[in-house]
Image (cartoon, rainbow, N blue to C red; front, side):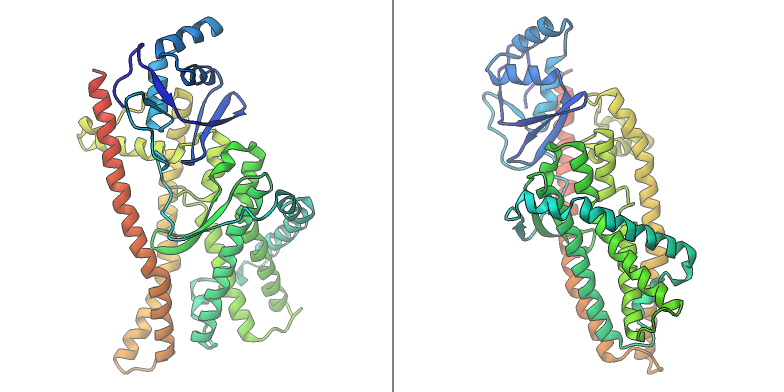
Length: 427
């Protein structure tokens, strides 16, 4: 967008708004873009929507609030997010100005679920007993941490590896589907549209639910929607803990195959819960933090802050992108979250080293033994099972991950170029 002047007239895209404490959240529901602005900013936005110039909007603001406002900078922020365009510029396409999600290859809508039904399924009658189960599971896990599975649980030692692996992966997919369905139910309970898509998290093919409209709901509804999947994982994980605890302490005498499956399933739930603390990704816990801090663009602002820091350290100050448009109070939150972002990266490396690599090492070790003609606990069918599942779950994920990395890199270069051009034009 060209530099604005007091005489500039802009076109305001249709938007909805809701009050959130001292701020107002405006949303472009077609593009699924949401932005928090000061409550007074809504007066400026309405004036611009009425066709007034930027200068006239500034005068109206000053008369109403008794103080001046830098409306030109405010309009620049709105333009960057696609809420306004110059009268002689094309209206923003129906795509988010900052689409940080992953492109889904297929989407299904949950809007057939009525809000009334969703409220019953996510109300106190379900949540309170669920919390009791989770609390009991935590107590049992703390009292006997030795029963918690390690990475070797996925090797099904003492059982039929191929059969148990296929069943385990199927159970994991069902668990993931329930996780995403819980998000959709919580969103539908307040009338927000929800869709499920097949996408990727890094190199893993996953299902992801789009409930971006939840930003227009109350903060309580947002917390409920963001934590719904976490709740489901903790609930079913606790049931598995109870099963293993009862078998380990003689209350049950379960067959070995069921214990092996329960241990593997529990490990997948624990990994998914741990994944929520990869603060450098947009996990459920990240969205809870973003909602608590009232920062709709917390991740992108944090990544830009860290990127600017690296550019300064590597003597590339000319490529630093200004974040002067971010309010000082919000920028302090960004700096704090940057620390969590780094911790999340370190935590993910520990998870890689102590969870994923040990399993891969055993697979490689068994394959080498087979190739050398040495005794191995894996049969040809076992190796074929691993190969097929890896190709299905990770092959597609790798393709999507590579595509998204390329698109993200290209988008950031475009955004940086636009920001630098605007800074140069402003002098």
